Length: 575
Image (tube, rainbow, N blue to C red):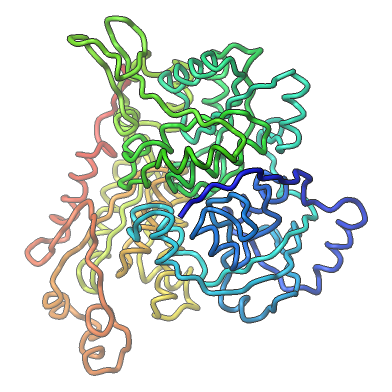
């Protein structure tokens, strides 16, 4: 339970070694165990090293982790609501001991930091999920990420050899120290932080400008460009959109910098956490944006709910945070006034226009008009370049079903039909083909099956984001990894999950290789549908039972679905 404790002091000196010490760390690291950081861990490390996460000096020890979950603060009493943990494999957890040093590296092997181990433990992830998110439902991306992470945590202090390297928008990647120095240079004493993770359309522009004017504050636009956000499909496009929107703000009172944060979607805890980060960047006020304050994620297109923000807890925390929280006030566009006004002040009998994030994506996908009252024309142009209409997008058709259900045959017919159209390159990733060329070293354990499907998903996502069509036809018996593939592919285009729901009895009757008979005789272990489960898809886009359908008829069902959704068919021109 949260209890306020005042007078929190902290150091803002970065955790990066200088000169000879940095070289010494790199030299010594050759003899240490190494850990290759994930994208989100890289974000956490960068925020630790540059002191955006002050007062933290490393990944949380077990005592700090348990205290944060229980009381919103570290074991020493410092306010901190989010567990910053380093999840690792059982192999590494078993190989190192407390007091040892681990080298933290990026995917290219670059030595970034030394971690001195203080704690190694296996957390109760169900308890963590319920504490942070009030749910274990994996439709929530924070829960999904938690449950798919490595099983052990290692905590300890970090000493950096260098910050993670970036090659994009370098002038916007300001550390907290650099940001505070820039504010001082400009003479800014009152600054409101606007940590956005979505494009700034006119309603956000209008509200942020009003809030800054009402407070007499300068505005720091601080886009979140961290990893593993399921909607951060293309941060390059987002930043270009921010740059276009920035032109409409009064230039002497606005600046922009990028925030390399891996978001957690944790409601009240997230709001407090973001406020502490804003304070470390030198801001005096923090704007609680729509993304944090709302329970409805239609704006993002998600089917999950963040925990609601608790104003009582937030109020108590604000007393010691040293930063003022500015709540979001919904605005709506009133056509008669040609203006945005607060939703609770809309007069009766006036026409209010709204366009949700979901509707925006649908308009982009269909090539329809994006109204100028909703966003800036320059932003629309950027979005149209990044999100062409569906008939110009890449997409993946992912067949799943039992062996013998007809997946491969249907996939081959669909392949030919799409090749005949000739408007996009088409690639077939059949289960047997992939096993032979990509996954020949894997067995049929659940772990290896999931690895195989993730490989298929990765290849399909690359094909899709580059405007091609991928047709996949593995068995893919498990829901969780199918959903991982969906999220992976949808970052770059369309994803259509086709459940070939032919009954087991029919599949056995068609068994030309005798595999089912061998499985029932115990000669084949872990055979899907016999000695290993097939999890029925929870959200298939199309379900086909081939018992009484020819391959051509089944393939035509797929083609009709693609046409209905706009992936193939007549071109449309935006109005």
